Structures are given as structure tokens and as C-alpha cells.
Length: 206
Image (cartoon, rainbow, N blue to C red; front, side, top):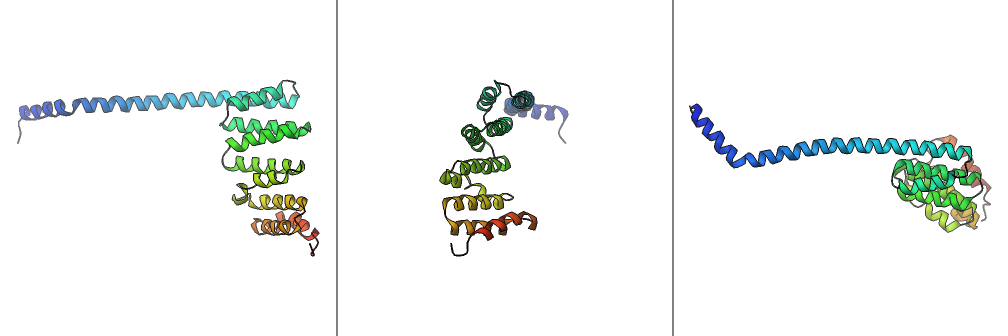
């Protein structure tokens, strides 16, 4: 059995060879830990600030403030990429629609499409496509539906809207096919009633 002196000597030798690496590892470990805590706290504070600004913008838009649109656009630009910026873009678009300013609404929804992910992006796709249809920008509307057409939970609505666009373009055959796809993609029978009505309204000979 090794004596205490031998064990101590081995410990000294080990520390001499590996001590610096252990200390460096500990320093890095603590640095990462506290750095992450700082980052986490900073991120939380930033999100809280964005939330407050977003609530103020919503309140300004609802109140019809003359500075609301400018403030909303600035917030969307400054916080681009954040969820609150995307939500503000939706609010800005709706406010513009209420005022009959479809160009501003389309631009706001394009910002949402460019920066949002998941469901928010698909909602922006659909909303912008509807506005483009209203402005008779048919090709642009169809392009806006490209990504959402294969999104689970949105495919039926996208196909229905694509049918509306194609029908407006005079492509009855394409519209019929799109409506059939919408019915096939629907998750429940109740959501197909309007689509079936649209489908049945297309003359059989067209």
C-alpha cells in the first residue's frame, strides 16, 4: 500500500502536469455559467421591454393616434426578427386595412412573412395573399401561397384561396382542382361547406 507521502507526491506530480488545465476548465465553466445567466437575464429584460412597447403601440393604434402608424413602423424595423415585431406588423396591417390603405397592409405583412416562423408566417402568407387578390395582383397572390400550401393545418385554407385567385384569373379548371384539394385537405366536414359551394358554382363545361 502506498504511504501518505507517496500519495501526496503523486498528487503534486498530477497537479503540476494537469493543474493549469483544470483551473482553466473551471474558469471557463464558471464563465459560461454566469455568462449564460447574464445572457438569460438580459434576454428576459429585452423581451419585457419589447412587450411594453408592443402594448403601447396596440393602444395607440386602437386610439387612432396620429403618431401610431409611424411608431408601429419604427418598432417593427427596430425589433425586426422578434415575435413582438411580427405581432406589431400584424396590428399595423389590420389598422391599415381598416383605413383602406392596402399598400401599407401588404408591406407590413411582407415584413411579417420575412421574419416570422411557423404558424405566424403561414398566417401572414394567407393574409397577404387575400389582400393581393383584392388588388387583382393574382400572380403575386399565388406566389404568397407557395410555402403555406404544404403546411399542416393551413393546406386547406391555402388551397381554397388559391382556387379563389385562379377563378378570378379566369382559370376555372385550375380553380376546380384547387377547391377539390381544399376539400381533401380539410380536417373536418364543417369546414368544407363553403368550398363545396364555390366548387359547385363553377360551370361543368368550363
